[in-house]
Amino acid sequence: MNYTFRTHGTCSTQITFDVEHDTIKNIRFTGGCDGNLKAIPRLVDGWSAQEIADRLKGISCDGKPTSCADQLAQAVLEATGKKG
Image 1: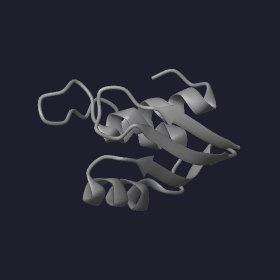
Image 2 (image 1 turned 30 degrees about the horizontal axis):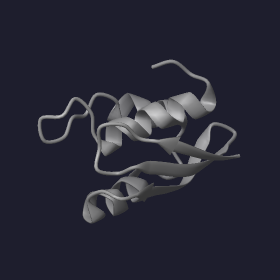
Image 3 (image 1 turned 30 degrees about the vertical axis):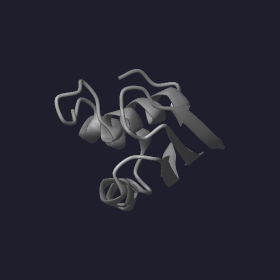
Image 4 (image 1 turned 120 degrees about the horizontal axis):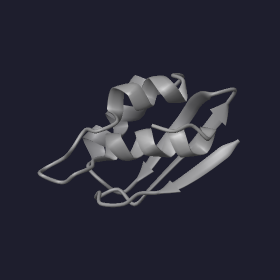
């Protein structure tokens, strides 16, 4: 299943990814810091939604209460119907 998540409070505006049996693949960010948004998908591609959420949830950026990593954690939980 392909999933699109509209981010809130970050430079990135959208995250898209595929969910295959609770595994998250093909993560793509729209907008944001180029280097970080290339690194995050390479690091977590193929992980379960829960692994991503456990490691990335709560990360902040530049004094903001969220970050692109935190938004990805929220997105994968939403896509898989889990609660964080």
